[in-house]
Image (cartoon, rainbow, N blue to C red):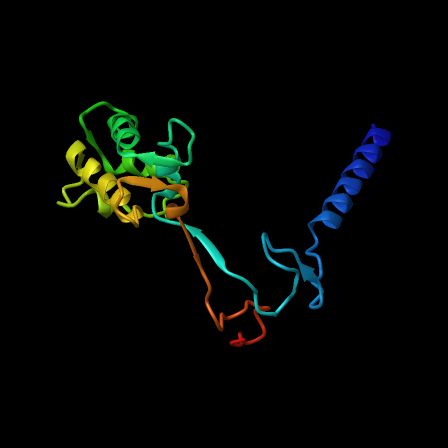
Length: 181
């Protein structure tokens, strides 16, 4: 019995030591280089160089409407997708979308609850029910705001915003003050 207890104690001690070794926070080297996607290597604390690319509100959702894979959404593709999207979001098939259904749909279709458009964009009358008409109006608004040249065709290039911010603040360690570069 004592022999088993010793073996169990040794195994338990080894596990604790092993777990503790992997739980330590690595020490950060202030001169370490960091690889940024689509950016040049930069040292910590240096200004991030180059343009910033972002996807416009609802861009991922609209991109999924491209049924013929030509990297653009025409009005026919948009209208066909619009017919199905409401039914997907209305999981209880009540004919209206509740705030809970909308949140679940936004997480799935937009990638995050933080991704625009927000809940209030869909529920214009603030009655906690999104009708098919309200839902479609919001989708139409997203399409029209993305169609920068108003030709009725939403090209993927219109869904992407590329911009440069001069004198961006660079993140450094928490103990250092941030400086404008």
